[in-house]
Length: 324
Image 1 (cartoon, rainbow, N blue to C red):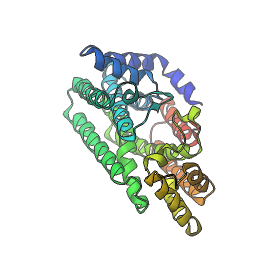
Image 2 (cartoon, one colour):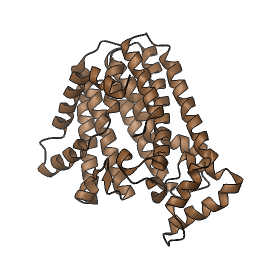
Image 3 (cartoon, helix red, strand yellow):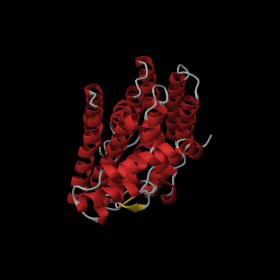
Image 4 (cartoon, rainbow, N blue to C red):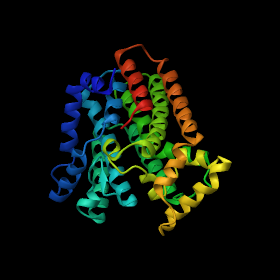
């Protein structure tokens, strides 16, 4: 089943979540509402709300309750993107002007803060302090992950372990708790929510590795930003780290990366990307993504055999083979 088919099966409920997303950021200040709406209308896969709704199917499915998980998680993800675009000095996202580009850095930062606050207001409607704590801890970890990424810009000596810990914080945790909290809000058994967390975590790790690969192989039309954006910003991703482990490739690739960092024309992103594309680093990164997906599917197999489980299986397969 394709991703669009899964969205089709959830269309009525996802349409409701989409409306609630727009309502959640409306009304307090005209400019903040406009900038927040600009971000949300830029689109996105809305995978986190889909994970929430599918996880809710393993308990007492109640869309009115699940909205207070699905909406804030998508808002938190969106807010992090606004801040990322400021840090990365990005002019486009998903093929459209960023908030930072259309307005300015100050407006973008306050927009991100505003969306974060709106997310916390939404989740407070559930009145469950345990859910609040899980969400707050994840937000702390996301912030640490962002700081680690800044610290490691152009750091070619970082370990693969450090990279994996960073993407755990930046990407995988939010997907993991989308699954976990969706089940918790639906009063699913603790074992079920734990298995869904494990599934979401491993899918999230694979998702980010695939994102890193797409940055090297995608086109601006398919990924919504110029290919090689990570390299230009100094974000040393997994395929690059693996390529740097190749003795015959390390020194020429290091020269390109140092030249890109210097900004004096001595380094060329296209040349660096071509080196990485033809290196064993690509295969190693793909193999690791495959292993994470295998772990996700192993956790899924321990859940009841339902249409929701089938949809989650198909999403994992999509994540590991996606081209956008």
